[in-house]
Image (cartoon, rainbow, N blue to C red; front, top):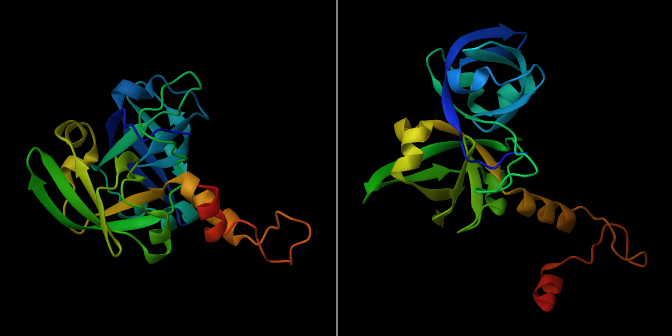
Length: 219
């Protein structure tokens, strides 16, 4: 479990293909020496396992399924990546709860400077738009962000100067792809509402007592 508060960035040092998967070596002097083999780390928002490490760099292995669901297929040597270690039970949650399980890939459709911030519009895949709400949380390349506005399948986010300087988003351009993880609470609520699990044994199979009308009545 992560919070979407990026600790540092690393630089891709090596990429080795393996039957559709990847082994990625990331140079990250401020973090690599602290890892143990088998530790978890979020790389651009994807929860991965450290398989090798030294004082200056660490390596992770990425299976073909993860490559197909993320922007890792575009990764190149020299690219910067966002890094975050897992949340400890004693930590504050300064962002929001992030699992590191990427739901899909979005594309930056617009970018402009607004005051001291960078304002992005990100194209969200159609199957993820039901989970994206204005003022809700979203993780883009592992960064916890608040959705500032919605227009169809375009979600707007603002990046403050600090976030731009300590993550990869400061160098993102129109057309770039970003990993998306929607808010996990919304995802579970939607799953319960559409799963067909019966809350009452007397209900017909495939029905559910959790409906839009029921939610309105309980508020």
